[in-house]
Amino acid sequence: MFWWAGRQGNWDLYARCLAGDKWSKEIRLTDSDGPDVFPGAATDEAGRVWVAWQAFRDGNSDILARRQDGDDFGDPIVVADGRADDFRNPHCGNPSPPRKPCQNSTISLANRSRP
Picture 1 (cartoon, helix red, strand yellow):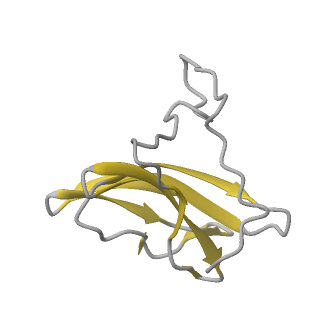
Picture 2: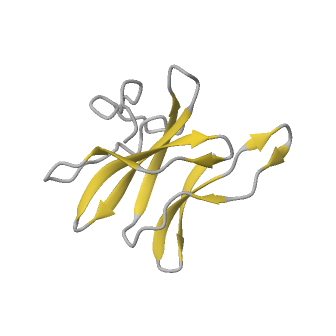
């Protein structure tokens, strides 16, 4: 499970894993000075969990992602960092109405290699 929370004056991402009927300890995924919001998760062809989010850095928003590696997550990678702001549609995958179209908001990580 992924979410963002405003703590200590900034918005960061957090995660917990469910194993059986027990939740793991909370994992803090981001700690940048800029806000990190709108996480979205998917699995790749190998079954690995990826989380992507909108990250505000240096007056611009970019899309970053991390891959789950066992009980932790790998280093963040930049998925989109155009000169203009990059956005993830926060309504994609939201089961609650209103549903908004998700065209042009899907991030494919299957063929992306880690640095």
